[in-house]
Amino acid sequence: MPGQDEPRLTLCIGGQSHDDWERFEVDADLLTPAGGWQLSVGTASPVLPAAVVAGARAELRYGDSVIMTGTVDELSHEVSRGQHWLELTGRDAAAVLVDCSAPVFTAREMTLQEVIAQVVRPLGVTAIRMQAEKPAGVKKVSIEPGDSAWDALKRAAETSGLWPWMSPDGTLVIGGPDYSTPPVGKLVMNRSGGGNNLLSLSKRTDMSGRYSQTTVLAQSHGYGHEDGKANRRCTVKDTSMTLYRPRIVVVGDAQSDEEVQFRARKLQADARLNGFSLSAVVRGFTSSAGTLWAPGQRVSVQSDVHGIDDVYFVMRRTFRGGRGQRQETSLLLREDGIWLPDAYPKSGHRKGHRRGKKDKSLLTTWEQVDNA
Image 1 (cartoon, helix red, strand yellow):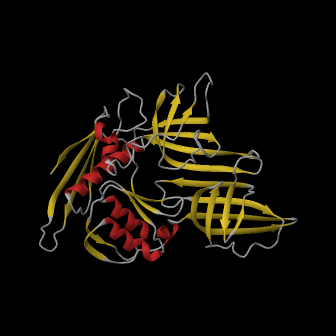
Image 2 (cartoon, rainbow, N blue to C red):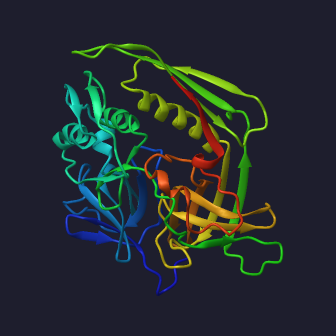
Image 3 (cartoon, rainbow, N blue to C red):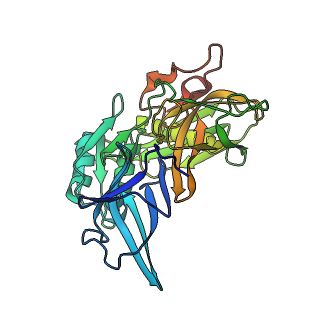
């Protein structure tokens, strides 16, 4: 149950706000196109405020911090004897990109920023931020009828080894993590109990989707004065693997050798990423340093029970609480330095690792075997 001085989760719609919830859950995941929330409240009033309707712009806050900006997707108002029950669900500002089709167009030799703006601005997304060192241009883009704006956006970003997501204030971010940023805190679970601040910690490893090397075979079509190429190829090897588990992937069209390299590295990174995870539950919504938990952060984890003492990457964060319940945060943690290493290539020399620890980033434990 929240303490008297603990901030509350507040929903703001049309200048009105509410912070006394029967129960709530707010989820944000870098791999899920639109973060979502679900809030439930019992009310004695038979009339809802006029601004509380499906499609209304909504902002979730925790104290003075914005958690998510988006819209109300669904509103359910149940009336029974002596009680009115209201349940609201919504998603962040990426929802319109997931639900709606992209404008149909074909273009060549555009910057990544120009492609993204042409896809998302007609749908009302105007705040865009690039979060990468040197995003590559796009030689050719072709948006077909029926393509969702999110799928078109994701394809454009992936040609540079990048990824799209929404920031809490509704800004569309294209890029990747900077692994040189310091950890936001430390999570501890030791047998002695001294210094423990984790409510639970679960470690999972899975070899079924891991590969010792991934080879991407591709071709490109000619256009203008440029000939096509039928033998684009790149193999990326995970030197941390002791078993020989090769994988070959054929893609229909690639604009350049660099795009084939990006795809090979991403496929191998995704395979390794999915082979390890930590699921942690902590009390409250902020780290020990007072930082609101969010995907994209780095955090130190120490557990002699699990045999770990290292820095990990926050991939997903879920806030939960409600009336008479404690506020808690669930975190899905992945290996640090693995996801989207091409956004900031030099950030392999990261702050926050213990001296003498082996760097697990793609830049040091993975090698590109060939590129023809």
